[in-house]
Structure formats: structure tokens, C-alpha cells
Length: 232
Image (cartoon, rainbow, N blue to C red; front, side, top):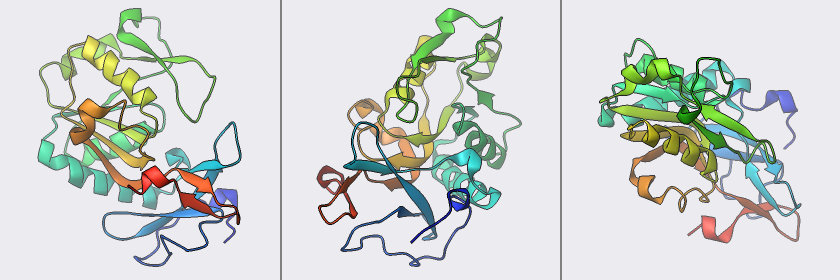
């Protein structure tokens, strides 16, 4: 199956449209399944440093509004039992999802973290940040000090687009912990592989994704298959 790059993340297919475990492996796309059974095709991206490992990719700010709404609907349903009083969005791709979830929860606003330092920000309200999608790129994550009154003594939901290795989310959690803030739940659109489980072990029972995708390895015949530990 061949899809033009600009066509990814645009359509939702009916349940069962795509085979989720083809014997020959996946070629260029991976079908992720939402809680209601609908499917979305994700491009398979080869990871830096080799040609034998890959992941399914979701770039939320390039997705259609139809998909963005479906993800926000599904994540809101998962978060409601935790009764969050305020939503924090992780930049940059977690922000549209956090916005959608906050609106669906009936909140008047959400709190956005940032990676651009405004002149009134304070260094102690920041942490170094890294991501699987931006290897070798150093930046920091900041909390606007003016937002602290919105978060103190509140039930906080932390929202990101994708949780992969857990490194960027760990930085965000350290930042919030330094402010005395402990989220009651952490939500995302996609749990990408299981590499995040060990770094975020204390939080596992509070981490929820709309769907999960495995790390993929290339078979000798050329197809992509879930890594063995991902199938455990």
C-alpha cells in the first residue's frame, strides 16, 4: 500500500478495514486501532542509527480535524473518571490535543507549557528536554510562573501527543514536581512502543493512551514485524 506523505493522518477507516497482524509483516504503513474499532494508517519511520528498527509515526498538527476530534473524544472518555480540574498541555504537538480535551471536560482554559523562554520566565521553572523525534537537539521546557495559581492544589491532567521513550515526559514530571504538582493522570494519543514503561514505572497506572503501537523490526524478507518484547 502506497500513500502520499501529505495523505497520512487524514482519514479514519471502519473497524476491520486493515489487517493488524499480516503474516508477511507491514510494508510502509501501520494500522492503529481506536477504542471504538476505527482505524488510522500511520507511516512507518526508520529510526536513526540503523535500517532494522522503526516506529509508527503520528504528527498531530498535520492531522485532519476529523482525526484530531476523534482522538480528543476518546482521550476525554478515558480521563473523565479521574475528574481532572485543569489540563496541562506539553508542547508542541500535545497542545492541540490538550486544548480539545479541556474543552470537552468543560474547562474554560488549559495551561500550556512552552519551549520558548519569555523574559519573565524563571530558570528554576524549567528542565532540559529531549525527544526521539529530535535527536541531538537540546532545548528546555518551561512553566510560566503566572500559571502556578491555576495548578496549585488542583487535580491535574497532563496531556502529550505521543509517549515513546519517556525521556521528554520525565523532564516534564520533574518540572512539575519542583513546583509541588503531581498529575492525577497522564494522557496521550499514542503510546509508541513499550520503552517508556521502565523510566515511567511509578506512573504506569496513571498513563493512558488512545491507542498503542509497537516498535518494529525488519524481517529478512523485508516486512516490518512487532519487536519480540513488544508482543509480550
